[in-house]
Image (spheres, rainbow, N blue to C red):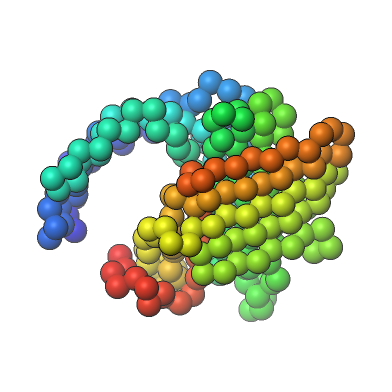
Length: 246
């Protein structure tokens, strides 16, 4: 796969094209934050030490949790207009990839809400930790944080091939989340670590999402999306369902 001239302006524009045996794909898009408090920059990691310190070795930050896109994507024989599409801008960095994780994000425009969370296992002293989880839910100007990442008594996560469920408690209340990408398209990317080991990232943008929040100081509410969730898994093994890995 060869790339032609690609320009990227993180303030809101991207343009370029890619050549492959199947043909040429191109993109010319722009984006801007949704006009809502839920679109403010977000970190799921609750403390600065986790974002700037040596642990964990892989970090995550979401400068723009809710964006509106405009422009088009060009595929062989087809042009897709993306005016009004919703999305987000996230950022991962660090000295190596997480040993294993599930990550999910979804915007619920009719509810003026969004959520983002993870369940991950990391290496500490040569051993692998149990799953550590965190989730942030925003609805309008209110943020509910379920980020007691190291509190194993208040969290429960299950990760299957294409599905992730999560249950968390914090001072803000409790939440249950289910994200399901079964029968949906998924892409796979190979991620190489500095030591030469390869991890495999599986990502779908069409996951079904259902989350119920029970605040400690208010009425419960449920957020649903039939196919608007970004759901990603990082694993140590390739999946035989995918024949091409970049």
